[in-house]
Length: 307
Image (cartoon, rainbow, N blue to C red):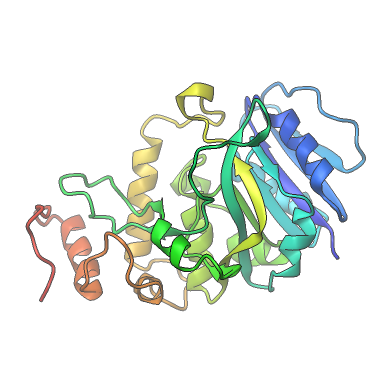
């Protein structure tokens, strides 16, 4: 097995220390952990030869931190992890056992109780699959965007497929060969997307549309804390950042602007068809989006996109 470099971006993260402890405890192979100190005070971290800290005097943002850490990493594989997560035993060896040269691998996601530091009992199943919304799926809301949503029906019907295609993901944890990240993903685009938003869309669409594969690996699980209002945001959103990122992401991919793509976005929609929120006439859905963005009237609930 090869070395895995675990990258943990951090800015005012209350649960950074237990996350780092968890990673060091549950790895069974050769790892290094790179904590990105994005211009803020860190908690006391464990003394461990596998741990490195990247200090920055002034905040640079999550994407910039990941870009820098990936260049400094010494592992053959990268695992990016939010600073409020727990990982299953042997995650590092399990994930690389099923990871081809152009794959992005996502562990199965579940919910974290950060106080007890264990799986939160919600009565809900783990989260295995996500889909990309049609950007016009909410009438009268031009900012709904190309977001990723949980796909329970796909999770249910494909629950026995343990390494399975994943259309997109939530973004709190991803795994891939370091060389692939540097060749295909780097640099993550902070200028247009901003600090933290639409990370999953940027990564998964770069992978799928250039001929790679995104998969969920259900042999490995990570527990993620949805912080919400209870624990607050670590990385801040600048004024209007989310709206700008939403508009840019939808415009960029719906118009097939990425020069390295060998497939259009419509190819991905067709691959996972039927996809919730998308009209049955995929060609017309793309054309209608472009018409609306060019100034056409926004669709009403009763407008039909059928021929």
